[in-house]
Image (cartoon, rainbow, N blue to C red):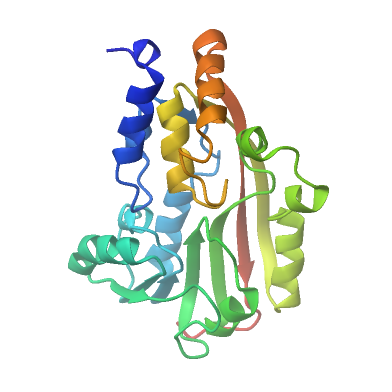
Length: 260
């Protein structure tokens, strides 16, 4: 049955029941699309891992991105703070020889100074630059894809109303550069892209907001039911709801030479 012919209640009930652990968005196939960044983060991640001897993936989620990146160095560690994701990442990554560490995603990182020659992350909630610099060896690299400023804010502001300029500039790539440099890192590469995103039915919206919990903090269907119903009618009448995700790639190096 086409999603366009299903009722609001059917779509919402289905989306509320869908599991949201991990960072796998395959449930949205056919229901939402997001343009991919041109740089291909997972490919770049694999290339860097192939050259590393000791690597750390911060906030690994369910481990899906790391697992698909290719061969791992002799020492490969991943951290994650949300218990359901810790369990999922452990099941996925332990058979590959990856040590999964449950960590609150707050400083300090539970590792010694200069423990890794590569630190990576895909969509960290917060980048603790001083800690990243501390655990990197001299000559080591931080490679990450971050969510940029005002990402999917068309959807955020649909539910929360207009946001302040301060809020809209949160996660700005320029501020990430400044913070990395303030921690003593040299930024080698910084690229930003705005990516068209479409939601084809209200179930996709509900699932997305349940999974990406910081978009509309405290989101529940009960709290936003009237606004959801209005959006359902809008999609039925005018077609997909269009927003724009923002992403930036950052590669930074800790000055000095590494023996790795």
